[in-house]
Amino acid sequence: MNDSKKGWISGLLFLLILVAVPIWYFTGAEATTEHRDIDRPWDSMPRRPAHVDHKDLFEGPFETGQEVTRACLSCHENAGEQVIHTAHWRWQSDPVKVEGRDQPVSTGKKNTINNFCIGIQGNWASCTACHAGYGWEDQDFDFENTANVDCLACHDNSGGYKKGKKGLPLEGTDLLAAAQSVAVPTRDNCGGCHFRGGGGNAVKHGDLDESLYYPSADIDVHMGRYDFQCVDCHQTSDHVIGGRSISVSVDNENQIACTDCHMPKLHADARINAHTDTLACQTCHIPQVAVKQATKTHWDWASAGEEGREENTHEYMKIKGSFVYQKNLEPEYYWYNGLAGRYLLGDQIEAGGETALNRPRGSIVDPGARIWPFKVHRATQPYDSQLNHLLQPVTAGEGGFWKEFDWDQALRLGSEITGVPYSGEYGFAKTTMFWPQTHMVAPKTRALQCQACHSQDGRMDWEALGYPGDPIKWGSSDRIRAGAQ
Image 1: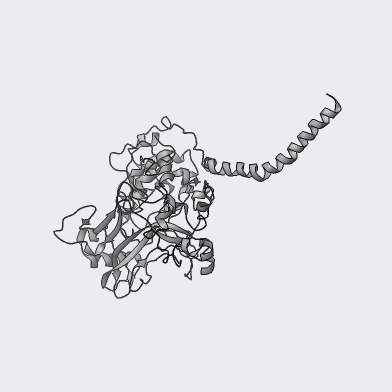
Image 2: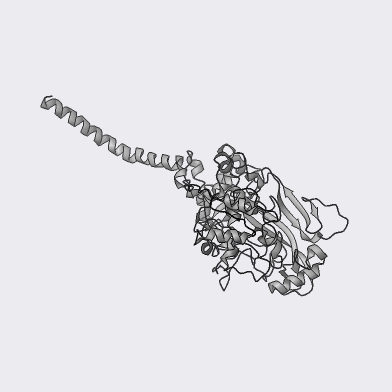
């Protein structure tokens, strides 16, 4: 090849490089990165460890759950010590500084009040059937004893392991079969307690119920279409399970989010991407909850104890009062920055209205807040009509309301245990609890469309959210939020 031809080819290659590299850098590289972020959320998913068959590692027989735990800890030497420092074990947080409180507070299922079964104090034997331990029957339970850790609650894969009062295995449970089956936790393990929170299937959360054991994609696209297990999102390190619930938590630590895997600006339509600064992903992608099984939305304790009334699990029970359940529940929408207020035992109730036990924090002027979907559970529950604070009764325990149907006695017993004063005069106050909805994610074809919110009968109460009206009419959301400041 002569020199002139070589020069011509070199010049052409140089020109191509000169043009192509900037084009790739400013468009192709960005597109490649964006494409990877959109289409490969799997990169953020955990790699489930290879299963170790334990069938030949346990000989048995086992008479108690503690015997199984000792066998587990003989190999997994650090596991017990890890578990006993977790919220799943202690049901109570370390002290946390909370806005509006002079002193740090420590909260959890162990010591807070709710508007379902109200509280566990004095009712331990029944409530702790879902504790990841054995033998919690009173206030003297030893949280330092690793032998009482229940490994099978989370790791049994036999399907035959069941717990009863005080968290003890039910009589007749095949503990050897359960021990030989242990593996990575599945939805069956987590759902055994979390699908039945509040006293029964679908009662409490709204977005968690037994339909998620084997869901279709229409119920939950992650679990139904891709067979996600709970631990795929609630990733765990040293037995600390990722995630937070504002039903009991007052801090924002250890949270998980859609954006752990998905990019916030992943939509092809820029108009949709513009919403992600003010809307949680869940707001559009969870249009309804309680999709297959109705969830409880109202509980009236004041009607409990009535004689001769027909009983129905979803309408009335003498020991618990009246209920309202709803299916295909449309959430309510509130600003939420990941934190919540918390009513603590002894606090004054709100005058002339509903007392929020865990009101979500955030507002239109909070840059860290997003509009979130919530199930709101409303109740009437006992309070001291003289001292003006809520009371936690003994219900399931000895002398409790479920046995004696005597509110005064149940409230006196509860006062002695909790230390909250009781004047002897009681009534029933209205309360609310807020449950952020983050499961039952619908397929994208069923995500909310524009008119679901931006229409005359749309589901958003714009004025209650702090807007002067529908942002489509009043300008961009960013300008409205900036003006509100």
